[in-house]
Length: 358
Image (tube, rainbow, N blue to C red; front, side, top):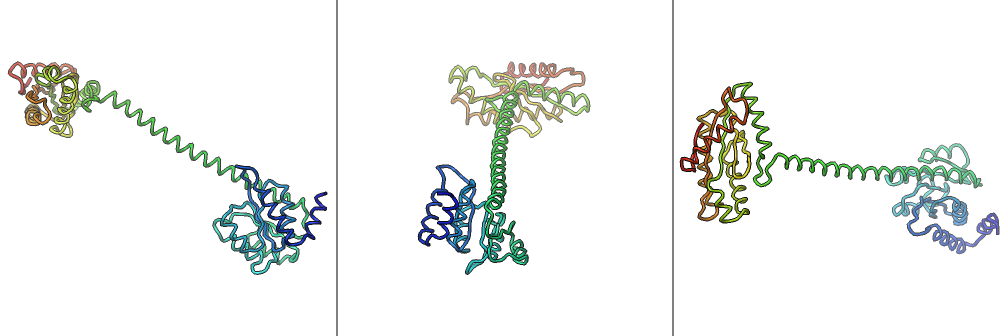
């Protein structure tokens, strides 16, 4: 049987027959699993018209949903996202104009294009009223199938392009989020690597390399501006006994607790660094010889008082300290370090747990 004959049969079909056909068409429109198509809402109070329109629109790639009244159409918009509305103008209770105004006023549906289909109102006044409610087209019946299909196709293509664009934008947004996460991860990794290159992992203070770079910068500042600059060099007395008696893990704990104690005892501008093993150094900017000695004594006393809390039982932890001050003829940091090392040796030779000056 031809399509034309089928449509003619539908037009004279009884109302129960028409409802059965609408149910079958709706089931067929659902498509296969996972197949998502744009949806068209057709609103007409005449069931025969709904059947004809659904059969005609079966030629386009869209799910066609029918409503027999304005109220039913509004209810359907709560459960579906539509790409296009096809509205009959003359309907009881709520005509097409009233329905269009309501649809155009709702955030969910105001951007959905509306096409009016009418057999009753063909004058310019009604056409203008339709456009005033937000319609994009006004088609008079009898409908030319090819014209309607062409216009519906245009709006479906626009919808599909918009949907595809939104999908691409969502993908780009997610990729942007992923990229930002990766950038943050890489920045954190770079920061961790920089930290490992400059910070002693065990004691969490500058390592020898970083300390020497800071000392070089402070030395240049001293020679340029003449501001006083002092250096403290100290190490732990009898540290070998700690390792030999309690093991290297205990020795590491002493080094870690010692550095924490020293940081607390020093001023904000002072720079504590671990030069290696149990040997530490402190840069004292803006500090002359007398003030440097005072800081060294405070450091030694603080360690002596605090050590019972974290030392290895009967082995009290003390430090020997050498102090020196930059002089105008000090050409290198190594020169100052050697002088401080001589003072440190003197403190050890004199009985340990004391401060010596060079």
